Length: 343
Image 1 (cartoon, rainbow, N blue to C red):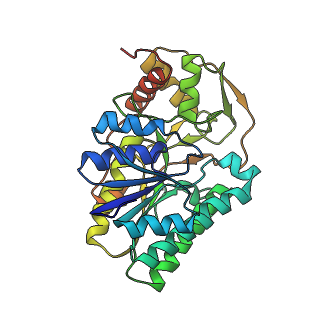
Image 2: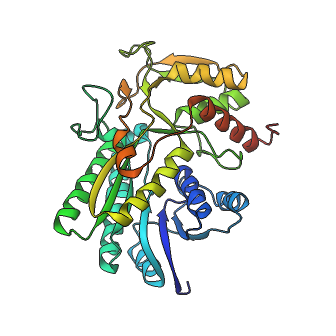
Image 3: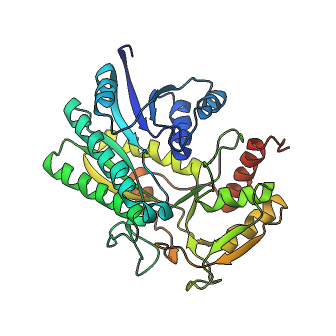
């Protein structure tokens, strides 16, 4: 890698679902980025799609955040002013089955990243956290000052990292950190060229619905029909992935003007049940979604939706896209992915 004098943003996990959409928004703003990804749950094909949308070829490095030598080389050879940290495993169910993998990848990986950042003197970070750090909330909507706990190893790994970041800012006030607690990202880029493409069986609701709609899967399994919600199915705050991506740019702008650490919810403030999402998808696409019920999954909470007012106050950010647009864009992406002309 040759020395590049222009400042850049390092995006770890940058060709995953959330990272790639944030990369698009960065490039559209004229900002430069370095993408680091180990391809454990992503594909290099995403880079070509990003270039088609933005007109810019991304600067990509294949590698792992646990590789100290590689991280040190990237920081030494490039003028990196901030890091957006997406790299991490994210399946609740998988984390219950294989917790050590989650603690190693998410917690140890982040610790190594922070160590190298401190060594080099790059102390501006946007961290991809999760609403899972709130555990089972006593009241709704969820505010940032609610007690935090974890009901599964995935959530525990995010909470551990948040605690590490808190300790870091106490020990060294030069750090500037934005912790973004996502609710449930769904949807795809409006071009139909970029979206969620999980390897194997989808862990998240919307891509599974899309695969049923396209005929790739026979039916959707709805986990739990006896939650204390309006229709017995789990309720979540679904947020369009492009709105979420824009939240990261707002967080970078915030860090340019602020010091210390801020934790902010990124959500819409509205909860939808699993059945409501299914019926919205059917209404928007005209496709019937077959589904069956199963037992609750370990670690899932009944209801979770955000109070997003702090994001509006601190970041001047709010979600703009509704559930219909989330479904419409997800379906357009699924059709394109399956070689079907969405027009």
